Image 1: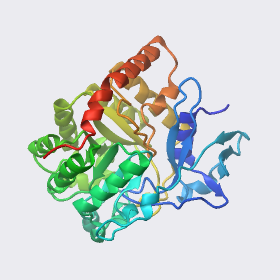
Image 2: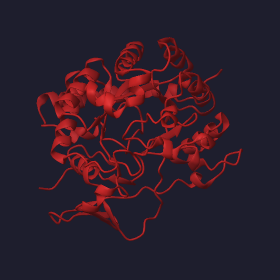
Image 3: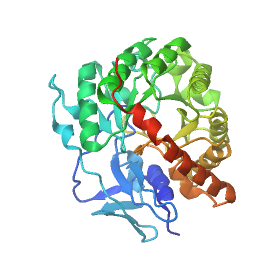
Length: 391
């Protein structure tokens, strides 16, 4: 049976894609490594007509067995003979330009869909202690020499906004021994003051809650908290540094605190699907949406160079079930998803992508209508938040 765009996205996450011929742009491995694959845009299909962005695994060992072959502007499914249109977005011209300090902008930030992702701070402390998360490759991609100045980030974000239409900049760090919020704060302030974009922050709950309050006051529009797994034993085993330094509960309390201070849907809980029992992943989605936050669900990718490089990827059928559940819980809790302009994420299946998995019930149609109305009503709010702010 022919896959819809979201189903194809999920299957590509689970199986990767082989390349036939040369690519018009290179592959970049940055941040935690999830963006190490091939950026693709899958054109929308009725009834949603929403394009889907996906960063498809290419270099990982499990891709050797993929049934998918990218050739020209099509993805061929060699199991069924179905061909799916897909385009590679052009590499931004500003990637090759240096900042005033001489650092190439592609070394400062990278497009992962339509948003700009930037790792700030020094290499994650857990990597220096041998306590890194077992699925991660941040320590192989970001080191002390890659630290970016506020000026580097502002110049890169301005170029991305002006030339690529970026509306959202996502800042993240590895574990910084209690200093993460203080490291991120000047970048948040500068982006809001000099660039005028929505700013997301992804840091570990290393310090007291008032440091998150300070970031909110500085203008942070979004927080994401990577507690990764709902099962406490899986969390301990696969996230040893997080377990020893903070514990799983710290992530739960931080998400509760920040979502409680911000508009509904302004925060997310980030989890990985495929390493713990599916029922625990569904439980995580239930809990995140009960707070009024939205779930960011990563399909487990056995990254080359990580401690889990030889683990098998999850089954498509299981991941489709997870993503459908994500849509249904966002619907049931009336979580406002997809309101901000021009934010497409290629690293995960977004809740708005998962609308393709909806059964088309009256509840689904009502939720989609309500989201459309909220999107129109929210336009002036986002326009205001995306203006450069005075000090």
